[in-house]
Length: 118
Image 1 (spheres, rainbow, N blue to C red):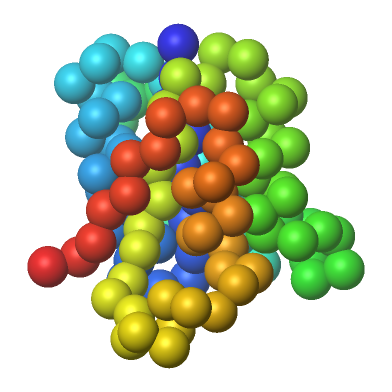
Image 2 (image 1 turned 135 degrees about the vertical axis):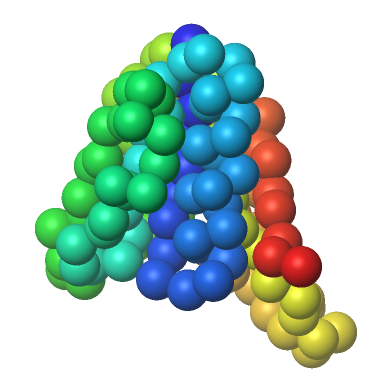
């Protein structure tokens, strides 16, 4: 059993990482972090006893972020939950297709926990 979290380079991504780390700690399971920031990701602030594996995305030409996350879920059959950060969107923003969040919510083969910073 493991929890996978998609971490973006914004407050929603950082919040998703914190929530996922709390979930993994409570469940005593591994946390798999898909780093979508295209830079280094500091996970040193997480509980030292938590088993954390960071998977870095190679770059913009690598692949679509939603596809990268879905591919990692497929590659890790031990994943039982996906955690993603969301943000408040306008009515027009909600109507736009192609959002990474929307695709992950609709296409994830495992339950998705979507979290929003307060």
